Amino acid sequence: MSGIPSLPPRTLPPGFLYFPPFRVQGYSIAGEESYVQIPELDVCFDVGRAPKLMLSSNFVALTHGHMDHAAGLSYYYSQRHFQGMGTGTVLCHQKLAAAIEKLMTAWVDIEAQRTPYKVVAMEPGTDSEEFEIKRGHYLRAFATDHTVPSLGFVVIEKRSKLKEQYIGLPQEKLVEIKEAGNEITYIKQVPLIAYMGDTSPGKHFEREDVANAQILITECTFMAEDHRSRARVGKHLHISDIADIVKQVNSPNIVLTHLSRRTHLGEAHRQLNAMLSPSDRERIHMLMDGRANRDRYNRQIAEAEAAGHATPAR
Image 1 (cartoon, rainbow, N blue to C red):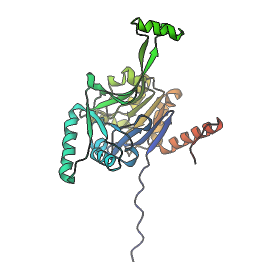
Image 2: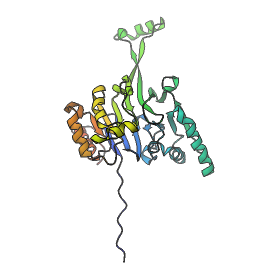
Image 3: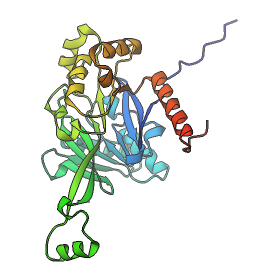
């Protein structure tokens, strides 16, 4: 008589971090799957295998075409249509747009039905580098450096502000100035989220909108000291690059993604602690570090309860 078989192996749950007012949630393991959703902005960076969690995003910002980032494109479109969620929109590198069109055309022959979809080609340095994803919020694409055509993205909030010289004037005076043909407001651009995708180091980390983003989400594929050359060949980041990048950017919250499954999180913590000052170390979080992120979230709940704010049911 045969023995009782073991249960299927458990899969890692999605990572979750809360930086008020934004949730950063998703899954990112190098070579396996990557998607990072910001529900409050209605966008998911990359699509992974299009799990249920990310389907609610009306927009997918696709950084590049490698399978672990892009495999679920057709399923994303299909499930949104099937569940009555509206037609999904994928924003991608201009060199990928035609290929995605061909992919969806191929599925017409396979399924014998046509799934609605939208593709927006993004071209940095042109009028096609920005796309409005919700009122006053724009997705801006910029070039990164990977082994295939690749983009990074920044979500920019554009706020209309009264010019400094007019602050404090009564409303009737402002109306008078405006009717005289003077512009009394200006647009302030606030970088909210920067997502780098797969990339090697470069000047794209020095961009003002990246360096000043409230949340910077960047890959860190390699940790081992002897893997620096592998990082360069594959055009990825090594943990030593992160130590340099942290000093270049002002982002108070830096989220590391795309770690290898072989990476031991304890060793990653030890290396970060050794490389960075305590103040810089506090800025860094790892999306897939479930224990640390859960402890952090529980502290946030406790602090909210102590302040008398509503918290999720436990």
